[in-house]
Image (cartoon, rainbow, N blue to C red):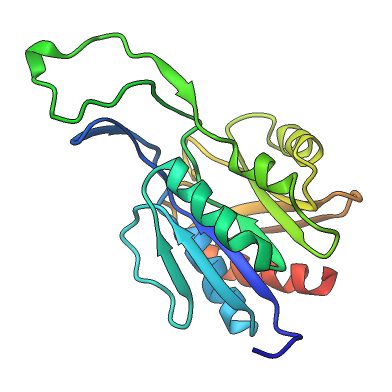
Length: 215
């Protein structure tokens, strides 16, 4: 691989956290934005590894695909590949919590508890960002229903990211599962670039092009 080739690690899709082998909590993420970013990065000549939660999408051609299900599995895959990447784009929607106990067998309906205790899932972005070198760039995503820009900026600062993509979810025109999106790319130095409304494939190309200029 040529030395000048950018090595990009992208996460996409949802994660699942299980109560038992057939029941879990998750979210509506389709993975479309992350997969579009992987394709756009590949088209830009980058070497791409895509860590994906469970989605119904074909892998982009020429992209290394790593399939995971839980947040812990996604963290392990990101931790493995991050040391050799130049850019991490974390667009996956990871469940923030998981049941404290998971039954090895299906729990029968009459034995189900109506109260479930949860524990936090590892904060992948914050944990990985704490290990990054000056040569690496980390891009996070902030999917919010309210105060999108403010929450995105807070996440950018607190997790010490280089860039964050702010996008609104929930309600009509939700970014989850939709083919279109509207986002704002915010830099740690205050830069702002608005993209959309447009197809996620077009937004992905615009984001990659903007990031390429900054690298």
